[in-house]
Image 1 (cartoon, rainbow, N blue to C red):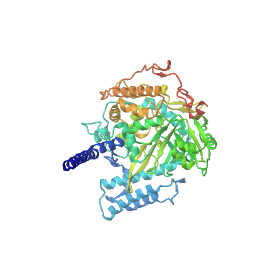
Image 2: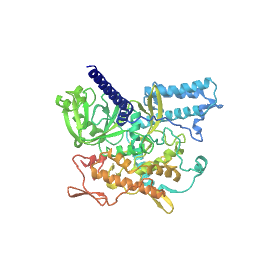
Image 3: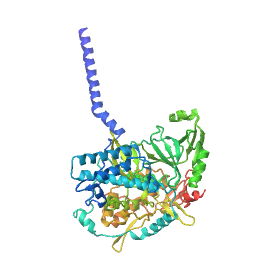
Image 4: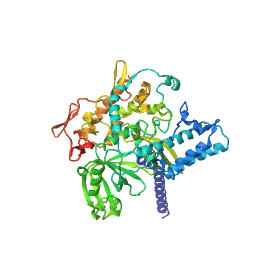
Length: 579
């Protein structure tokens, strides 16, 4: 009997040891592995430095005898934080957000403390000068831009002139300018600029094609596979049809768009993020994957009223983009639980759309002022010209840049400059009579974007606004960006293109064309390709025995019912996509 009890006890101990060993393995090996698989660690994004080698004279107003000019600082702070000041030069001033006011007051307090301590101005205080100046001018620029609800005739003429001019002015000789001789390391003419609100170096922990997601996580953007959003108000900006909507939490805002940019904006933003820039965050939604709810309390209460408003503002018929509409039913909530609070409310769903984040943590000012405060001297902004050329972005106007503040938690904020609205790309055509333009036409997206002619580099993609940094870009600036583009390998390019969810033959054709454009850039700069990628300029694709792509050209307008904007027709948003 004693031996039997002893044997049972030994077996019990053996079982316990096995359980403890398994628990040890899970806690120390399996659990951490599982956690990493679910979510990569968030690599923090710091603000970086705004300081230039030569400080702009525009900042002299902040100084008096080498010390802080407190009177000027207080006057500026009052303008930036007082919402009772509603007019600037007879123009209504945009309301300042509470978060922006809080951040600016914190900056002012730092300068107040420096003044009280009678400190000489140093790099730390200059960083604050730069930031306050940019906030001040950006607010003014935003107010002026908001006062112009429509593009004037003279602005249209200017865009057309720049489009024509840009085809012939971007010629570069391999040389060193006087500015570069003074400001750039002669032993490394393509050295990276330091991290700044305008650009950040890549980090090993984050693959280039994942930088878009890293930026989104830092801003607490949560785009789900299926989204339920609430109508907020019409949008009056731009030419692409859009409305403002709210997340179900009523805090985070989104811009809901239709038309020819729903694919291109997604890829363009991913590529710019991969190259080191901050961007807007558009997400593509396939058929019936987004539900727009009307709560009955806003200006627009159902699908019919939405159609009328979109037609009134954008002259576009929304009907071809709509799949379902009506009243939310209990049966619908069984398929999508998030609809439960909205039973009995009006809804509408779409064939395709793009949802662009306006997170509560990010406050948008005006432009990031590419031609002010010597920003035209920044390599990261000059080099962006080649990034625009790479994706064929046509609309490079100043209003498509943004100065933002990002809440980092604990009432800490960082300034960030954003390249916005990158969807006017990947094959653009413009019409004058009648006025129109269309984007996302793969057959209009050239196979090459750069070449070397007569010993000079030539760029061939037109842009509608030659901003100061692009006008002053040098061969070395563009060579720097060319090296960044060379770091995008085949897997990265495919991953980013796949985010747009083009039909497969079109996605494949875009992949080959992007790879070819990348190759033309590296060849023009005589760079060795670190990640050689094969491409076929005579790409041919058959579907069900029928040629869809032949000799590198799209032949068939794929699934035209599902893609009412059309991938072949050149009729764009200003002519209702031909409907």
